[in-house]
Length: 494
Image 1 (cartoon, rainbow, N blue to C red):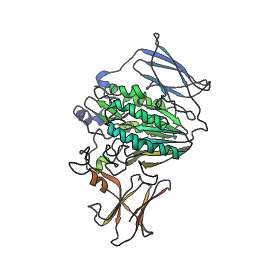
Image 2: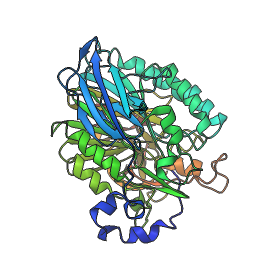
Image 3: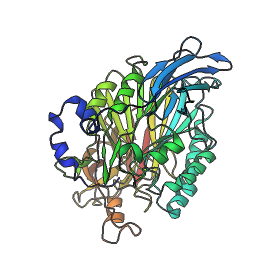
Image 4: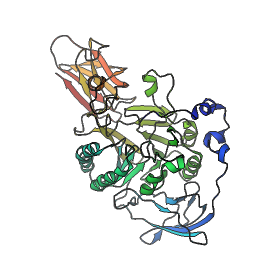
C-alpha cells in the first residue's frame, strides 16, 4: 500500500454521491462513450472424461452463458474482450499452467470469419472437494533480491509445512495482490515458488502489480493478464462459490479502490447462476471496509485505502453468505455490513520485509482456511511459528499510556472471540479491548532511522490489543484466547 496523488479525481469524488448510478459505475462513460468491437462467435464444449458438463458458466468477462446438457455453449462477444473463461464447477480440479498458477481461460483468437472454437477438458477430484482448504498470501511484495530471498527461504517452506499438515484434501493458494513491488520481472521468482509448493495458485491483482508506464486502467494490467489471465473470474469448490475481483483502478499518476462497470456487469451475470444463500468468498486486494483510517485519527479514509463504490458491489453480494478477504494495509482487521463479512489479513512481508512484524504487531504470515460444506473456519499462521502462536503478551507498563496494565496482542481477533487471563492458574476475568499501538511495533519501527532498511515505516494504532491490571507481586500471568470455533490459544508472561 502507498498513498497516490489525488489531483484530477478530487473534484469528481466531491460530486460522487450526486452522480447518476451509470456514471458512478463507469467514470469513463461520459468521456468516451461505448466501446464497440468486431463481433466474434465462440462455440465450444466443457467436458470431463469425454462427457459434457451441464450448467458450467462460460464468460468473456461481461456476458455469462451456461453450457447445455451436453456441455456445449455458444457465446457472442467482440474483439474488445480478451479471453473466454469458465467457472470450474465443484468436484473438478483447477487447471493450471506449468508453474501451477490456475488457467481456466483461453485467449480470444478468432479466425478470419470472426469464429472461434473453444474446448475445456476437466479432471475429476478423487474423493470430491466438499472438504477443502485454501491459503491466503496477502502482500508478498518483494522489491529486490533480498526480499525475494526471504520469501523463498522463510515463507515458502512454512507454507509447504502447512500444506503437509492439512492432509489429503484439495488445497489451493491465493496470492492476494501486491505479489510484486512494481518490479514485474520478479513474477518469474514468484512462479518458481508456486511451482515448489505444488498446489494450484489463484492470483489477485494489487496496486503494485501494475504496468505503471501505462495511461489507463485497462492497459495497466497488461503484464499481469499476459501471465495469469483475466483479472476477475470465478470458480467453485464444494459448496462455496469463489470470486476473484480487481478493485484497483489505475490512472496516470495513482490509483483508487474501485470496481468498474464491466466487472460489475459480469458479477451480476456470474451470480445469476448461483443460488441465493450459498456461501460466497471474494478475493480482492483493497479493503471494502476498514477501521484503519478512523483508528489513525483521520477524518475520512483516503481513496486508495478502501473501495469507493463498495455499495454497488454489496448490492450484488447481499443475497449470499459473503466473506470478503483482502490485504493492502498490512494490518489485521475485520468488518461486517449486513450479511457481508470482511477480513483483512496481515502481510506475508510484514512491515515490507524490514523485520518479522507488520505495523500493528501482527507477525509476518498468511491465512489458513478450512472448508467443510458451507462451514468455513480460519486461523492466521505466523511464519516460522507453531500453529498455536496467536498471542503476544507484554509486561506491566509496556504500553506507556497504561502504566499499571499488561497488554496482549491477539491479531486473529474478531467479534465473538473471548480473551481472558489467569493469575497462578486462577481465572481473573475478561481483558478489555482498546485501540493502541503494539509495544514491539513501537520499539522496532519508531524513529527517523528505524527500521533500518525502510525508515519511512511507522507503527499504527490497532484494535486487537487487550489490557488488564497487572499484579505488583510475583506470579504467573496466562492469557487465553478462544476463537469462534472453540479453539483455545494460550500465552504465558513470566
